[in-house]
Length: 400
Image 1 (cartoon, helix red, strand yellow):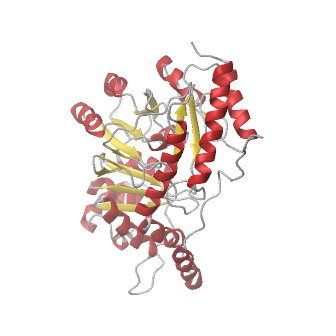
Image 2 (cartoon, one colour):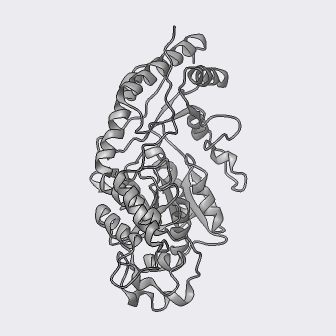
Image 3 (tube, helix red, strand yellow):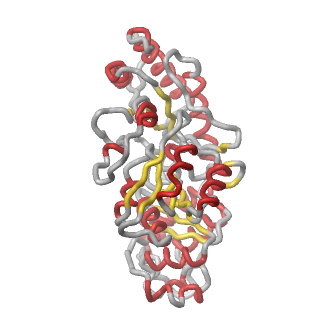
Protein backbone atom coordinates (compact mmCIF):
# COMPACT_ATOMS: atom_id res chain seq x y z
CA UNK A 1 0.00 0.00 0.00
CA UNK A 2 1.28 3.50 -0.85
CA UNK A 3 2.44 5.52 2.13
CA UNK A 4 0.55 8.69 3.05
CA UNK A 5 1.44 11.78 5.05
CA UNK A 6 -0.89 12.80 7.89
CA UNK A 7 0.59 16.14 9.00
CA UNK A 8 -0.91 19.60 8.49
CA UNK A 9 0.76 22.06 6.13
CA UNK A 10 -0.78 25.06 7.92
CA UNK A 11 0.14 24.09 11.50
CA UNK A 12 2.69 26.42 13.05
CA UNK A 13 4.75 25.88 16.18
CA UNK A 14 3.35 27.47 19.35
CA UNK A 15 4.43 30.95 20.36
CA UNK A 16 7.49 30.55 22.63
CA UNK A 17 6.78 30.76 26.34
CA UNK A 18 8.81 33.97 26.63
CA UNK A 19 6.46 35.56 24.10
CA UNK A 20 3.37 34.29 25.91
CA UNK A 21 4.69 35.64 29.22
CA UNK A 22 5.48 39.02 27.66
CA UNK A 23 2.04 39.18 26.05
CA UNK A 24 0.40 38.42 29.39
CA UNK A 25 2.30 41.28 31.02
CA UNK A 26 1.05 43.67 28.35
CA UNK A 27 -2.52 42.45 28.75
CA UNK A 28 -2.29 42.74 32.54
CA UNK A 29 -1.22 46.38 32.46
CA UNK A 30 -3.53 47.16 29.52
CA UNK A 31 -1.25 49.57 27.66
CA UNK A 32 -1.51 47.94 24.24
CA UNK A 33 -1.22 51.13 22.18
CA UNK A 34 2.39 51.85 21.30
CA UNK A 35 2.28 55.43 22.59
CA UNK A 36 0.46 54.57 25.85
CA UNK A 37 3.41 54.35 28.25
CA UNK A 38 4.04 55.43 31.83
CA UNK A 39 7.01 57.47 32.99
CA UNK A 40 10.27 55.61 32.50
CA UNK A 41 8.67 52.84 30.41
CA UNK A 42 9.88 51.84 26.95
CA UNK A 43 7.08 50.42 24.82
CA UNK A 44 7.45 46.84 23.57
CA UNK A 45 7.04 48.20 20.04
CA UNK A 46 9.95 50.64 20.46
CA UNK A 47 12.12 47.82 21.85
CA UNK A 48 11.21 45.58 18.91
CA UNK A 49 12.22 48.31 16.47
CA UNK A 50 15.58 48.82 18.16
CA UNK A 51 16.28 45.10 18.21
CA UNK A 52 15.36 44.49 14.58
CA UNK A 53 17.36 47.51 13.45
CA UNK A 54 20.38 46.10 15.27
CA UNK A 55 19.78 42.62 13.88
CA UNK A 56 19.69 43.85 10.27
CA UNK A 57 22.30 46.58 10.67
CA UNK A 58 19.78 49.26 9.68
CA UNK A 59 19.85 52.77 11.07
CA UNK A 60 16.06 52.90 11.45
CA UNK A 61 13.12 50.54 11.90
CA UNK A 62 9.35 50.97 12.06
CA UNK A 63 6.90 48.32 13.31
CA UNK A 64 3.57 48.41 11.49
CA UNK A 65 0.31 46.55 10.95
CA UNK A 66 1.24 44.26 8.05
CA UNK A 67 3.77 43.49 5.37
CA UNK A 68 1.43 44.97 2.78
CA UNK A 69 1.25 48.20 4.78
CA UNK A 70 5.07 48.24 4.82
CA UNK A 71 5.06 48.10 1.00
CA UNK A 72 2.55 50.92 0.54
CA UNK A 73 4.29 53.04 3.16
CA UNK A 74 7.67 52.60 1.47
CA UNK A 75 6.15 53.52 -1.91
CA UNK A 76 4.50 56.65 -0.49
CA UNK A 77 7.70 57.62 1.34
CA UNK A 78 9.49 57.43 -2.04
CA UNK A 79 6.94 59.84 -3.50
CA UNK A 80 5.03 57.28 -5.56
CA UNK A 81 1.39 58.15 -6.20
CA UNK A 82 -1.35 58.48 -8.81
CA UNK A 83 -0.18 58.09 -12.38
CA UNK A 84 3.27 56.69 -11.55
CA UNK A 85 4.60 53.38 -12.84
CA UNK A 86 6.47 50.91 -10.64
CA UNK A 87 8.55 47.96 -11.80
CA UNK A 88 7.90 44.66 -10.01
CA UNK A 89 8.17 40.91 -10.47
CA UNK A 90 5.71 38.99 -12.63
CA UNK A 91 6.22 36.08 -10.20
CA UNK A 92 5.04 37.34 -6.83
CA UNK A 93 1.97 37.30 -4.60
CA UNK A 94 -1.03 39.60 -4.94
CA UNK A 95 -0.12 42.05 -2.11
CA UNK A 96 2.86 43.32 -4.13
CA UNK A 97 0.98 44.65 -7.19
CA UNK A 98 -1.84 45.40 -4.75
CA UNK A 99 0.42 47.81 -2.85
CA UNK A 100 1.31 49.56 -6.10
CA UNK A 101 -2.36 49.87 -7.05
CA UNK A 102 -3.23 51.07 -3.53
CA UNK A 103 -1.14 54.23 -3.99
CA UNK A 104 -2.67 54.88 -7.42
CA UNK A 105 0.32 53.66 -9.42
CA UNK A 106 0.55 51.04 -12.18
CA UNK A 107 2.72 47.89 -12.06
CA UNK A 108 5.18 47.20 -14.86
CA UNK A 109 5.88 43.48 -14.67
CA UNK A 110 9.37 42.04 -15.12
CA UNK A 111 9.96 38.43 -16.13
CA UNK A 112 11.12 35.46 -14.06
CA UNK A 113 13.92 32.97 -14.74
CA UNK A 114 13.90 29.21 -14.24
CA UNK A 115 15.67 29.87 -10.92
CA UNK A 116 12.53 31.81 -9.86
CA UNK A 117 14.27 35.19 -9.56
CA UNK A 118 13.67 38.41 -11.47
CA UNK A 119 15.02 38.32 -15.04
CA UNK A 120 17.81 40.92 -15.03
CA UNK A 121 17.89 41.14 -18.83
CA UNK A 122 14.18 41.96 -18.91
CA UNK A 123 14.66 44.40 -16.03
CA UNK A 124 17.41 46.21 -17.94
CA UNK A 125 15.09 46.58 -20.95
CA UNK A 126 12.33 48.11 -18.79
CA UNK A 127 14.29 50.33 -16.39
CA UNK A 128 13.42 53.45 -18.36
CA UNK A 129 9.70 52.93 -17.68
CA UNK A 130 9.70 53.75 -13.95
CA UNK A 131 11.71 55.38 -11.17
CA UNK A 132 11.09 52.69 -8.50
CA UNK A 133 11.53 48.91 -8.50
CA UNK A 134 9.48 47.04 -5.89
CA UNK A 135 11.60 43.89 -5.85
CA UNK A 136 9.93 40.77 -4.50
CA UNK A 137 12.26 38.08 -3.16
CA UNK A 138 9.44 35.72 -4.00
CA UNK A 139 9.32 32.50 -2.01
CA UNK A 140 12.77 33.23 -0.61
CA UNK A 141 14.71 33.26 -3.90
CA UNK A 142 17.27 36.09 -4.04
CA UNK A 143 18.74 37.26 -7.35
CA UNK A 144 22.28 38.55 -7.90
CA UNK A 145 21.87 41.72 -5.83
CA UNK A 146 25.18 43.29 -6.87
CA UNK A 147 24.14 43.03 -10.50
CA UNK A 148 20.62 44.28 -9.83
CA UNK A 149 21.77 47.28 -7.82
CA UNK A 150 24.35 48.19 -10.47
CA UNK A 151 21.61 48.26 -13.10
CA UNK A 152 19.21 50.26 -10.93
CA UNK A 153 21.82 52.71 -9.68
CA UNK A 154 23.00 53.41 -13.22
CA UNK A 155 19.42 54.07 -14.31
CA UNK A 156 18.56 56.16 -11.24
CA UNK A 157 15.87 53.67 -10.14
CA UNK A 158 15.16 53.40 -6.41
CA UNK A 159 14.87 49.85 -5.03
CA UNK A 160 12.36 48.79 -2.38
CA UNK A 161 12.78 45.18 -1.24
CA UNK A 162 9.84 42.96 -0.39
CA UNK A 163 11.40 40.60 2.15
CA UNK A 164 8.23 38.84 3.30
CA UNK A 165 9.90 35.50 2.52
CA UNK A 166 13.54 36.37 3.27
CA UNK A 167 13.75 37.58 6.87
CA UNK A 168 17.08 36.20 8.08
CA UNK A 169 18.42 35.60 4.55
CA UNK A 170 21.30 37.39 2.82
CA UNK A 171 23.17 37.83 -0.46
CA UNK A 172 26.95 37.66 -0.09
CA UNK A 173 26.60 38.42 3.62
CA UNK A 174 24.43 41.53 3.26
CA UNK A 175 20.99 40.90 4.78
CA UNK A 176 17.96 40.85 2.58
CA UNK A 177 16.30 44.24 2.90
CA UNK A 178 19.57 46.15 3.22
CA UNK A 179 20.31 46.67 -0.47
CA UNK A 180 17.60 49.15 -1.41
CA UNK A 181 16.24 52.34 0.13
CA UNK A 182 13.70 50.34 2.16
CA UNK A 183 13.36 46.75 3.28
CA UNK A 184 9.82 45.51 3.98
CA UNK A 185 9.09 42.43 6.11
CA UNK A 186 5.98 40.53 7.16
CA UNK A 187 5.24 38.92 10.53
CA UNK A 188 2.06 37.22 9.33
CA UNK A 189 1.51 33.66 10.61
CA UNK A 190 3.15 31.90 7.64
CA UNK A 191 6.30 34.04 7.68
CA UNK A 192 9.54 33.61 9.65
CA UNK A 193 8.20 35.15 12.85
CA UNK A 194 4.52 34.97 13.79
CA UNK A 195 2.28 37.67 15.22
CA UNK A 196 -0.78 36.74 13.16
CA UNK A 197 -0.41 39.96 11.18
CA UNK A 198 2.30 42.58 11.30
CA UNK A 199 5.19 44.14 9.46
CA UNK A 200 8.58 45.80 9.83
CA UNK A 201 10.20 48.48 7.69
CA UNK A 202 13.95 49.27 7.75
CA UNK A 203 16.02 51.99 6.13
CA UNK A 204 19.16 54.09 6.45
CA UNK A 205 17.37 57.05 4.84
CA UNK A 206 16.44 59.59 7.53
CA UNK A 207 13.96 61.60 5.48
CA UNK A 208 12.30 58.50 4.06
CA UNK A 209 11.90 56.92 7.48
CA UNK A 210 10.59 60.15 8.98
CA UNK A 211 7.89 60.16 6.31
CA UNK A 212 7.13 56.50 7.00
CA UNK A 213 6.74 57.18 10.72
CA UNK A 214 4.34 60.05 10.05
CA UNK A 215 2.41 57.96 7.54
CA UNK A 216 2.05 55.15 10.10
CA UNK A 217 0.09 57.43 12.41
CA UNK A 218 2.56 58.81 14.93
CA UNK A 219 0.66 62.10 15.30
CA UNK A 220 3.34 64.32 16.89
CA UNK A 221 4.71 61.53 19.08
CA UNK A 222 7.63 60.67 16.80
CA UNK A 223 10.09 61.46 19.57
CA UNK A 224 8.93 58.27 21.33
CA UNK A 225 10.49 56.20 18.56
CA UNK A 226 13.99 55.08 19.43
CA UNK A 227 15.12 53.43 16.15
CA UNK A 228 14.18 56.61 14.30
CA UNK A 229 15.73 59.74 12.80
CA UNK A 230 16.35 62.68 15.18
CA UNK A 231 13.35 64.96 15.88
CA UNK A 232 14.71 67.77 13.70
CA UNK A 233 14.24 65.51 10.63
CA UNK A 234 10.48 65.84 11.15
CA UNK A 235 10.49 69.68 11.21
CA UNK A 236 8.71 70.09 7.86
CA UNK A 237 7.73 66.50 7.17
CA UNK A 238 5.25 66.53 10.06
CA UNK A 239 3.20 69.19 8.27
CA UNK A 240 3.02 67.74 4.78
CA UNK A 241 2.77 63.97 5.39
CA UNK A 242 -0.71 62.45 5.84
CA UNK A 243 -1.57 60.15 8.74
CA UNK A 244 -2.55 56.76 7.25
CA UNK A 245 -2.76 54.81 10.48
CA UNK A 246 -1.12 51.40 10.44
CA UNK A 247 0.79 51.08 13.69
CA UNK A 248 1.80 47.84 15.37
CA UNK A 249 0.61 47.42 18.96
CA UNK A 250 2.57 46.37 22.03
CA UNK A 251 0.86 42.97 22.23
CA UNK A 252 2.17 41.83 18.86
CA UNK A 253 5.58 43.36 19.55
CA UNK A 254 5.80 41.42 22.82
CA UNK A 255 5.04 38.16 20.99
CA UNK A 256 7.63 38.90 18.31
CA UNK A 257 10.67 39.93 20.34
CA UNK A 258 11.59 36.43 21.62
CA UNK A 259 11.00 35.00 18.13
CA UNK A 260 13.39 37.49 16.55
CA UNK A 261 16.03 36.62 19.12
CA UNK A 262 15.68 32.96 18.08
CA UNK A 263 15.54 33.63 14.33
CA UNK A 264 19.03 32.32 13.40
CA UNK A 265 18.30 28.92 14.98
CA UNK A 266 14.90 28.75 13.31
CA UNK A 267 16.44 29.57 9.93
CA UNK A 268 18.79 26.63 10.32
CA UNK A 269 15.86 24.33 11.08
CA UNK A 270 13.96 25.47 7.96
CA UNK A 271 16.99 24.90 5.78
CA UNK A 272 17.46 21.39 7.17
CA UNK A 273 13.87 20.55 6.17
CA UNK A 274 14.40 22.11 2.74
CA UNK A 275 17.57 20.13 2.11
CA UNK A 276 15.81 16.90 3.04
CA UNK A 277 13.04 17.50 0.49
CA UNK A 278 15.43 18.81 -2.18
CA UNK A 279 17.71 15.78 -1.80
CA UNK A 280 14.68 13.50 -2.08
CA UNK A 281 13.57 15.16 -5.32
CA UNK A 282 17.01 15.56 -6.95
CA UNK A 283 17.13 13.81 -10.31
CA UNK A 284 13.43 12.93 -10.45
CA UNK A 285 12.32 12.44 -14.06
CA UNK A 286 10.49 15.47 -15.44
CA UNK A 287 11.13 17.67 -12.39
CA UNK A 288 13.43 20.71 -12.19
CA UNK A 289 14.72 22.22 -8.95
CA UNK A 290 15.81 25.90 -9.04
CA UNK A 291 19.55 26.46 -8.67
CA UNK A 292 20.62 28.13 -5.40
CA UNK A 293 23.90 30.08 -5.94
CA UNK A 294 26.59 29.94 -3.26
CA UNK A 295 26.24 33.70 -2.63
CA UNK A 296 22.60 33.20 -1.59
CA UNK A 297 22.21 32.73 2.17
CA UNK A 298 18.65 31.50 1.83
CA UNK A 299 16.01 30.72 4.45
CA UNK A 300 13.75 28.11 2.86
CA UNK A 301 10.44 28.06 4.72
CA UNK A 302 8.95 26.66 1.50
CA UNK A 303 10.18 24.72 -1.50
CA UNK A 304 9.42 25.09 -5.20
CA UNK A 305 10.00 22.86 -8.18
CA UNK A 306 9.05 23.11 -11.84
CA UNK A 307 7.20 20.75 -14.13
CA UNK A 308 8.35 22.60 -17.23
CA UNK A 309 6.35 22.17 -20.43
CA UNK A 310 4.03 19.59 -18.90
CA UNK A 311 0.44 19.44 -20.19
CA UNK A 312 -1.98 20.87 -17.62
CA UNK A 313 -3.77 17.53 -17.27
CA UNK A 314 -0.54 15.85 -16.19
CA UNK A 315 0.23 18.60 -13.65
CA UNK A 316 -3.27 18.29 -12.24
CA UNK A 317 -2.79 14.54 -11.95
CA UNK A 318 0.29 15.09 -9.78
CA UNK A 319 -1.55 17.59 -7.59
CA UNK A 320 -4.56 15.34 -7.13
CA UNK A 321 -2.62 12.16 -6.45
CA UNK A 322 -0.27 13.91 -3.99
CA UNK A 323 -3.29 15.44 -2.21
CA UNK A 324 -4.86 11.97 -1.92
CA UNK A 325 -1.67 10.92 -0.12
CA UNK A 326 -1.74 13.93 2.23
CA UNK A 327 0.71 16.24 0.44
CA UNK A 328 -0.63 19.73 -0.30
CA UNK A 329 0.95 21.31 -3.38
CA UNK A 330 0.04 24.69 -4.87
CA UNK A 331 0.25 25.39 -8.61
CA UNK A 332 0.93 28.80 -10.10
CA UNK A 333 -0.08 27.56 -13.56
CA UNK A 334 -3.77 26.96 -12.91
CA UNK A 335 -6.29 28.58 -15.22
CA UNK A 336 -7.91 30.42 -12.30
CA UNK A 337 -6.33 32.00 -9.20
CA UNK A 338 -6.75 29.73 -6.19
CA UNK A 339 -5.94 30.62 -2.58
CA UNK A 340 -2.74 32.64 -2.68
CA UNK A 341 -1.63 31.37 -6.10
CA UNK A 342 -2.31 34.02 -8.71
CA UNK A 343 -0.26 35.41 -11.58
CA UNK A 344 0.30 38.76 -13.23
CA UNK A 345 -2.45 37.96 -15.75
CA UNK A 346 -4.88 37.34 -12.86
CA UNK A 347 -4.65 40.96 -11.67
CA UNK A 348 -6.93 42.59 -14.20
CA UNK A 349 -6.66 46.00 -12.56
CA UNK A 350 -3.07 46.00 -13.88
CA UNK A 351 -2.76 45.61 -17.64
CA UNK A 352 0.35 43.76 -18.79
CA UNK A 353 2.05 43.03 -22.07
CA UNK A 354 2.33 39.41 -23.16
CA UNK A 355 5.27 37.61 -21.50
CA UNK A 356 5.53 34.18 -23.18
CA UNK A 357 8.86 33.19 -21.61
CA UNK A 358 7.55 34.02 -18.15
CA UNK A 359 4.21 32.31 -18.88
CA UNK A 360 6.07 29.09 -19.64
CA UNK A 361 7.82 29.17 -16.26
CA UNK A 362 4.74 30.20 -14.26
CA UNK A 363 2.82 27.33 -15.87
CA UNK A 364 5.21 24.87 -14.29
CA UNK A 365 5.77 26.26 -10.76
CA UNK A 366 4.73 23.98 -7.90
CA UNK A 367 4.96 25.35 -4.37
CA UNK A 368 4.90 23.71 -0.93
CA UNK A 369 5.15 25.09 2.61
CA UNK A 370 7.68 23.67 5.09
CA UNK A 371 6.31 24.47 8.56
CA UNK A 372 8.65 23.87 11.49
CA UNK A 373 6.04 21.53 12.93
CA UNK A 374 7.42 18.99 10.38
CA UNK A 375 10.34 16.69 11.18
CA UNK A 376 13.07 15.67 8.76
CA UNK A 377 11.48 12.21 8.62
CA UNK A 378 8.21 13.89 7.62
CA UNK A 379 10.05 15.73 4.85
CA UNK A 380 11.73 12.56 3.60
CA UNK A 381 8.31 10.89 3.36
CA UNK A 382 6.82 13.93 1.59
CA UNK A 383 9.68 13.94 -0.93
CA UNK A 384 9.22 10.25 -1.64
CA UNK A 385 5.49 10.76 -2.28
CA UNK A 386 6.10 13.70 -4.64
CA UNK A 387 8.85 11.87 -6.50
CA UNK A 388 6.72 8.76 -6.91
CA UNK A 389 3.72 10.67 -8.27
CA UNK A 390 5.78 12.96 -10.53
CA UNK A 391 7.67 10.08 -12.10
CA UNK A 392 4.49 8.05 -12.64
CA UNK A 393 2.74 11.00 -14.27
CA UNK A 394 5.79 11.82 -16.38
CA UNK A 395 5.96 8.24 -17.65
CA UNK A 396 2.29 8.44 -18.65
CA UNK A 397 2.56 11.93 -20.21
CA UNK A 398 6.07 12.21 -21.65
CA UNK A 399 7.09 15.81 -22.29
CA UNK A 400 8.72 16.48 -25.69
